[in-house]
Length: 393
Image (cartoon, rainbow, N blue to C red; front, side, top):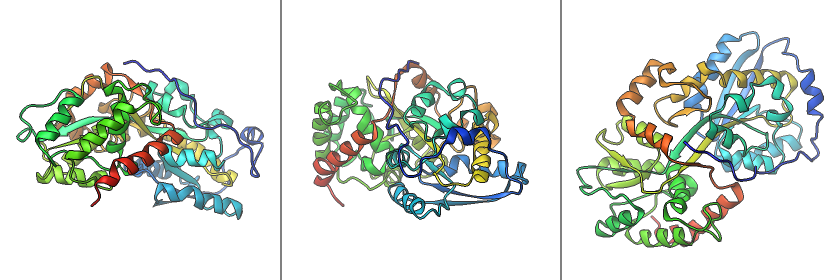
């Protein structure tokens, strides 16, 4: 596997009305004298991977944690809510589980405590424990979040073998197949779909575009390809779920996917076990990760416990549980966490529904960072305007 971090981190700096001498606090952050209640908000579907480990920490530490409340929210809405709480000096969200989207918005609005730098002494040495890809994804945080799960993601192309007799090997062959089989290929709106997003971000590498990191001036081939492909797509669903459902029901024969989205829906019976996958010639992995962030304004008692909990989540025992049912496959962000260390149920699911070709593909293909937030926002907007607006349902 080759990996090279070549792009800048998202945003830096900690100016603003809530500036605090975090380094001074970090030297004196005792554990609370009585157990605290913690309020987690998940905007990434991360609890499917980490809730068991978080609850295990609670059970192991009754003198530190009395209760943990879990809620879920849409990623775009959360930064504004936290900002309003901070402006009112009444922060009741203690920790956020997020992808790069809400994390980046919070960095931009200076919402987060810079835990990865100012409290580095309370955490494991991240550079020492992370997988190379997870280390790269951590580099996008400006130290204001900590990567807790990681996957190479995709793009993977999933298909039903009884319907697709001659499997394409290149992007051009996929286009030719879609033309010959109109309305049998589908992908979801990238702004609301991980597989749709990595398919869009992966095409510049596959097609040999000028600059895969620049959707405005470097994606001429990609935008032309997506526009032509759209002629043979009936509609773009709002999320990934409908693409899996329609593949499973037989109304579509081929869809872009990710490793986790391939494994988990087949394990759940949404997609037939017989579905297969292939990789397009020249593909690079477009990576994904989830993070834990702590808003400014959280009390020192809670902060001390959250940092200890975060250290636990980065331990091998907790990391092994992130294999889950393949939802974010592989899942662990930390080195040397093997499937054999995962719960027996996870091992059974992944051994039955996983694919041996994934290990080879991870080892032998380059891994790329996703677009930086401002670039991704531009790509979403351009796709919506030029591609998605042509086919609405």
